[in-house]
Image (cartoon, rainbow, N blue to C red; front, side):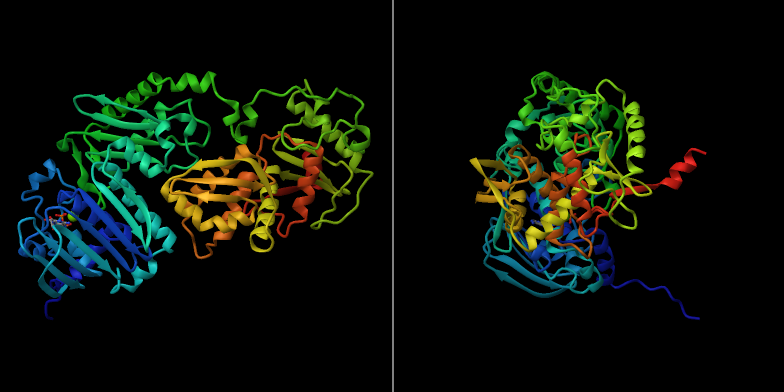
Length: 616
Ligand code: ADP
Ligand code: MG
């Protein structure tokens, strides 16, 4: 038999290598940006069309290349940056593998124009699938411009694997921001189709962060500086009260390179311990300098993970430096003692001082009988009011409350049962047959058992269906604000906001003006309060940013889901009887009452037989 092993042709080898380097348009952007920085550029422009699927062009004013270098740059393992393996431990550049251009040229149509300062003419090269199709002298400014067209044109499987334009653009913006944050002195711009997403002048770290994340960011930053033998830290952490509900703004740069490090992230969280609300994440922009010898950046092909020699020491230094900064800038005491309650979101209602109940205790009051007649002071205001019957139980422990009510429930239920609902029979609506358990569940009776409804989930379902209807069918009414509300956003958030503005207006928002870093709001949905708007929109935009849509991605659906979740009453909110009834009735008027829009169960039923079993 003849031999079977043969060497792969270069273009096949390059395609295979490309799979490691280029996963999506954003990977191309990252490689090209890094090359431009390595070439000493001071100004870098990025243009993309259709999320980079059609065109990615990066133009720099760096050193440029000679004719020979221009040709060589597309060869695999062709690099000007290292000569010996030892150089790997002295790296001052971003690239070093000499793989990026070769990989990109294997899977796209590439056009390179480049000229060095003292050359009279430049070089233009066109390459398709690793084959040079044209090469000529050309007139071009100093520096390099690389256009990458029709990415993955020769690997349909890869091309089909790309996500929606929204998602791919988000990846591009992520990479762009990381590079731009690591190099504030260089000016960057990013233009998508014909819209400018970022225009960042060369500046310092603080200003760069502010330019990317919006005007108000500046006041939220606390500087962190530490200089030790093994680690130099500079940069900023966000004040705890501005912590985000998503992990968006967390950046480590090690020797000017963005990296991910769950371990160091933990060090930051540890420094914030006790200062953050539940489920919120501190922002940070931390620039770490270490001896290049003490790290190995070679362990991951896309180079966002690195290995440190002395991780434990870095952890300790980082944590104490941040703690120190937070303390020094009086962040901790401010949060503990001088917090402005007006800034609190409804998430915190639970922690607010308890308002003295306005209702006198009436021990004979029966909550399950005609509350409207028996109690005139009953106020239907949402959220803050203490339900009158709640006062029945003041001074009693929770467990006792439950027992107490269960008894009444059983007594009551045996007499009054009508109405048909989902195979079970619920007690007539105007009978006050609900009560709240642990400020989380609404309990209602069924003919042959009981119904336990998760108040937050139920309300989410109700609002979701309402919102869907108002977005798609008829616009909801808005409440006009006395004074327009101006909210700050990042450029990326503004781009998203513009995309969903119309749908948002259908829900009751009125935007009088959207600028490059802020939005002016003059009307809001009737069901929310002004103080909730910022939190709500922030959450909404975070949801949109984090959405990795499956096949059934729909903007309307996502919008309705996100708003519904934010607007719905939370667990921990006390609901009076009217509110409970409102939720129960609203829920069972829904098309799909049993599941939340996120497919979680909304209620459970407990049949009497099961209860009886428990008493055996
Ligand atoms: P690496 O960056 O790992 O060296 P690349 O494939 O990204 O590998 O680039 C190969 C070589 O091409 C680089 O080492 C550099 O000499 C040259 N090069 C690439 N992009 C540029 C640019 N924008 N300006 C000047 N030279 C460049
Ligand atoms: Mg490179």
